Every structure is written in structure tokens, then in C-alpha cells.
Image (cartoon, rainbow, N blue to C red):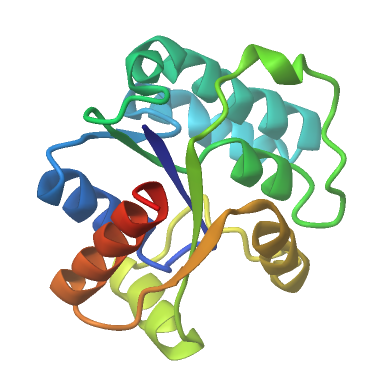
Length: 180
């Protein structure tokens, strides 16, 4: 099964994704992968929505071979930190949710997409603990992005408790959803 975690910066996608993957003996995959980091800064500085979109889309294409064995598998899982909905939402800072052209059917669909949310106070604390980050999306229309994620994702998970509690709760919800 391919489980995708989507959400705003600082909601705990990476921390929760790593913990969920470990707790369920799943593969954890982050987009863009680390090998994209040397180019990421130049793309961000270009402030070009098409460059942003195709850069992040290329990172999704890059992981297709890695995650394809997990598609619809009942016993093997991949937890993906950001996927196509983030790419679409952020390409124009939440001002336009119609992406530039790409062959939609050419990327694997997730078996489950989870919108991770948390309180503004927790999110602010997490972002502040990170320090300044060149890729923060300070000009994004976060209200529109939240609405977009809520419409696109299969479920929402509130990440305001301890990591252990949040991981256990999300794992239980996923199991319940797929054993009905």
C-alpha cells in the first residue's frame, strides 16, 4: 500500500512519517529526495511557478520505481512524505490549483492520502525550532492550500499529541480503514 502524507510546513509530516514507517515496518520515502537538494535552492530562488512545478513533479517521477512494488499490497507499505497534491498546491503558492500540463496517468496513485494538521501554536513552535529555512513558503495562501488538501485527501489526522500517541492513532485508523 502507498500511504501519502500531505500538509503544510511544520505540521509534523516527516517526523510522523518516519515514526509510522518504523512502527509498521514500512519504507519511508521523502519527496524531493535528498539528491535533489543541490538544485532545490536554485529552483526556489528562480521564483518561477513552472520551474517549481516541474522540479517537484520530477521528484515524484524519480520515486515511481521505488514505490511501485507497494501499490495495492496488503503486507508491504511505503509511507511517502509529500506527493502530487503538495506539488500542485505549492506550484503557484496556493493561488492556482490548475497545474501545468503533465500526463496525470503516468504517476502512481496513492492507496491512501492523509492530510496532516495541527494547531497553529504547535506548527509555529515546530517551524521556529527548525530555524530559518530557504524553502519556507512565506507568501503562500495557506487557507486555500488547507481547503485544497481537505478536498483531495482521503482522511485528516490531527497531530497535536505526543509522537507515540499520534503514530499509534494514525496506524490504527489506517488498519481500520483497510480491514472494513
